[in-house]
Image 1: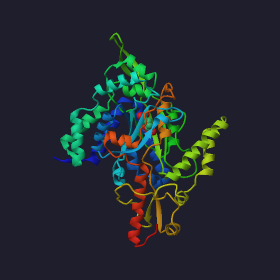
Image 2 (image 1 turned 180 degrees about the horizontal axis):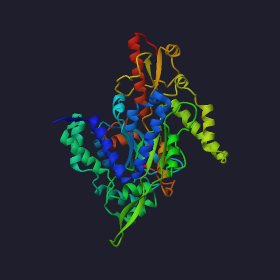
Image 3 (image 1 turned 90 degrees about the vertical axis):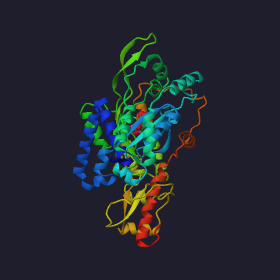
Image 4 (image 1 turned 120 degrees about the vertical axis):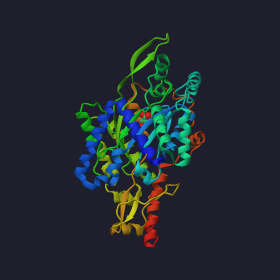
Length: 475
Ligand code: OOG
Ligand code: NI
């Protein structure tokens, strides 16, 4: 019997979920089609530099999903399912503090860690968990009812979890088990036909649409699945031309003349999907819910903590400028602020220690080193040392940008809230339940990796490889 390793299982799971979501949300198919057209256009116009942030093959297959669950137990089960396909929790996001719209969840993203695993298939899932204990959103009575409701449901069958554990322990599954795992996993993320308890859903929706989507039903589902494009401005225009109504803006850095950094995202508005409802007297009626949407993203260079602080500072300046000059388009204001505040070349980003790069001897090709990411130091978090600078200046060493593989809390909150029909209801003065990465680690019993540590480790490893090849210390 042929063996299916975790890398192939991940690629197959991404395809299966994409097929499922395409059947459920036809506008997603249009999005994927347009994304592919955009990528081909960019490649035709820019040749191989278009692939500087990832091969067309990688980018074409690339998706991120978003799923939402209710309890640490459910999140632990998801961690086992994702672990079965080589995806690990990276980053901790607390969207309860997000501006302008707080969302009553904390989140992490499951994704591959190693560069060669990312290159093989970078499937990642932004995974959020409700915090019913947060008194700003839920009073004690609602928390108790919500917790009872969540504890009574089963999102993932025992057989799926058992197969998941076997895959994680043995780095994959036999062909038949792999098929079974994929069938069960895909089915767990399908939109359920089960009637929705109208009163219960409405009670939660009055607080937050996200709370209702998570805790108002007995199942989970893919909230969205996001393809990656090489030119998100082109995609935004192309979708609008096809008559698909996009949200007002592209979240994240503006379009500008310098290097693309971090992540830019946009989405089309949540669509009304038919759902059955059960009224308090037991009658069933047809209705619709608007919770699922389509999103698309463009990825740029990962920023160091120093670069990230610069990014946050510029984004704040943009907000102030927009507030001070509401007549001018945000994009125009933002591009102006960026051209002053952000270096306009990769070399300068590197020199100032603002972004992560891997280093390669000229003539050695583009192939990135095979590294295992770990908990490294912070390459690029200070100014580049003189010897390395000299080798970069004379062209003996070349830079390759390390692509940002994670998410941005402000953009995530923007994506969440642009698709909600009303604001979150909260009592700012009530106690919030403190949550951080350590809390989450203890609950799901897995290390929550720190995004910047993974990038720094990759950067360091490339420098060590050069030093070994040259027999010198350059950094
Ligand atoms: C997640 C929203 C965040 C992103 O790409 O930033 C997100 C959700 O809606 O569940 O997916
Ligand atoms: Ni998303």
